Image (cartoon, rainbow over all chains, first blue to last red; front, side, top):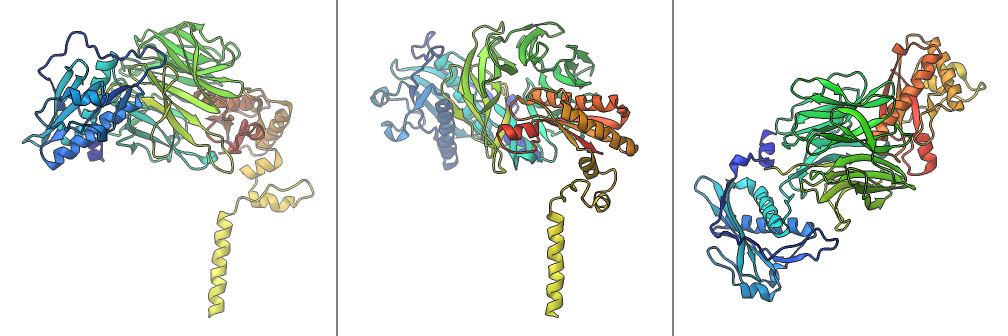
Length: 445
Length: 160
């Protein structure tokens, strides 16, 4: 168990030693993708296998290039070129022949090497080239344990994404979600964890207790979620590496809809009393709960603004389920959703500029975004059931789940999807089975 | 010898069939075999409650008020609970799948509490009644259509 956790490797950042490679890029790169526009033409990029001296390094080099390539392709902003079309076979210590790469219309080129070190570690170097300008745009070297190669590949993909788009990447991240199986009336639900690309998948619970709505701590080391383990539905806190879990506080009645504060020192959640649901924040150090809303309404799904000063939540205090914003210490709440239909599961973007939500209107479910003052509502996707958006750490992509209709004793298929803020590039996320309630981790570094 | 073996094997098959068979349906009206049914289900049991009072009430979409049919069922439940003063119950609140997950957990709790409030108003001590919400997690009828949704929006009184 311990071993598999270690292999899965939220390798401590200290294990990855990073060096800037010599050639410093020019102050202003010419190669740039403006991702603020609605429709982006994906940039053609060549990512040949990273060169390795021995067979083991060679295989890792090929695998790494594939992981980098798949990450960039899924973003919808890059079009990795078919390696069959490559003219130059880049090997270690050799510079790119730019004419060869121009000829296949590559605008960007990634080269890398994998070297085994005496101590059993790898030194991985990579360089990003602007083919047109014949310039190096980025270059880094990483030294790490061999089993950590996937994370290095994701970190490299993040560097490329950042260099080309000017935005932070999101590839060195994980997803926690609920894995579902069995018939709808007795659905088995398990906590599951995987890399953002579906690799290193593992189940954290065995399915005996119903679990729902997992959320990451800002360190990505802990998860808070709802479990029926003790008979009463309660908010739990779980350390990913140790597997240790505890019920959060000892409240009569149900606690649910938990989420960490941006500092990670508090968990905000709902608690039921006499049929009402109110929002509380619990200080993880003092274990003191603070009541933030008061009344007979349903107040739930609280989510902090990234600066921790405000909370968006959903409430039916005005007669139907709508979104409200209040101070993180409670008090007056201002309604921000005014479109038709009902609004739930608001989640504040890590950038602070938008709030994502689920909307129910006219028999359909939608995933949408609006500004924190309620203006600029945009619906990104609609289906029989789409629910529970979660933000990529760069605030550009949303993940959510999509469910189908149940019937004939079978639950409707439920799967995870990602979509760009522009509403384009909708992709299914690879999971071994049915999936719901995804939560995207922050960048692991 | 062979005949005896077959007979034993047959008995096993019967046993297996019994253990997997669904619980027998509740007895019919007054004309049904009342004496037998009460011994089969046991006085004060869940089946007894379902048969004599009805164990559940239904709700409108996104609502938690008890409708008049529900009031009648809960009145019968309160009589039944008075007959078995040692029985305590848990009210399960459920929703259909046309709501968001956390809101439905809250709505299920509100429905369970609405049932409890009526029973308490009818004289059942609140200490005998606990509540739990399953939100949209445990549909009774696993079909995505309005008829099934109506059956899934329910408060079920379960004997502890």
